[in-house]
Length: 360
Image (cartoon, rainbow, N blue to C red; front, side, top):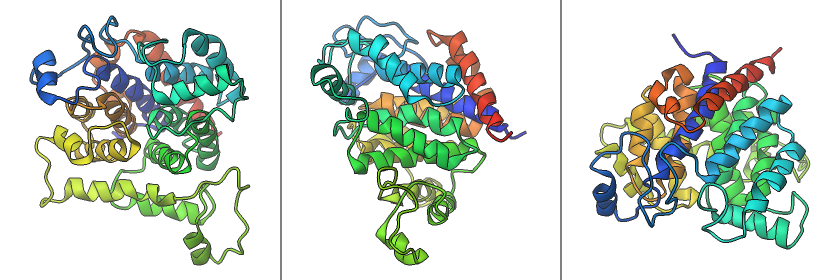
């Protein structure tokens, strides 16, 4: 039986945190021989970081800083009954920023990524207001985090996209990165509604843009729809470059084309790139989610065994695979092995129920 929307939303939320925790031990091995030497030929679950690695001293099943920020957002969403940016930024001001010093090897989760170092610089050292804290990192932390907002509002796509955009811009202000991040979150929300990641999803989402149901604007779209030049949304709310919505369907076609094979599938990381950049991470995650459509375990394990920025790859893949399979389709050991397993299970289920209430 197909998972309910509530189960899909819960699966996406749990999948995000599972992917993050899977990447903790083997994070950022660009030498794949070293990865195999330290973690064996195939990583099957949570592992402890080796001494001298990025998250050394942390335990298997714990979350990195990106995962902890996502968990805090999940707490905020469920406590407030929806996204309240003032509540979330207050949590950052009180729970996270005071424990950082602006350097990489500091703060909760053992390592602070560039996006949050930019936030620290803007918010703490320069005393900027929230909304002026975003930097120009080309990474995916904002997409990973804000996907929780998008799936929470899966049944209200425009509202979810606008709120996810607000959250993305807290840390990532580059318009291209923000547009690709939001595109990923919109895809995750569509999958949480029950849409398939297939060759037609991109056209469906692009049609929503044309109908002014998603916050993108583009000169070509204006010509096609006969718009007079007025934006469907205020300029501060709209994003350019909606082509990121088409990308997943092209990747799906590659994953299902008998003449295009990546074997084993973890080598998608080599095809699309090991680095942290969003232009490497998104296509690999889309490929693995498309390749293993109903197999959460295979999708996330191939993501983490690919090396490089495998934490982000596994987190992005976990969101999509969790939205596809639903939380009941995630093997219990992945949730049970999390450091905050009981809380994650409860909050994910509550987020799913709140998403359903959106339609009532």
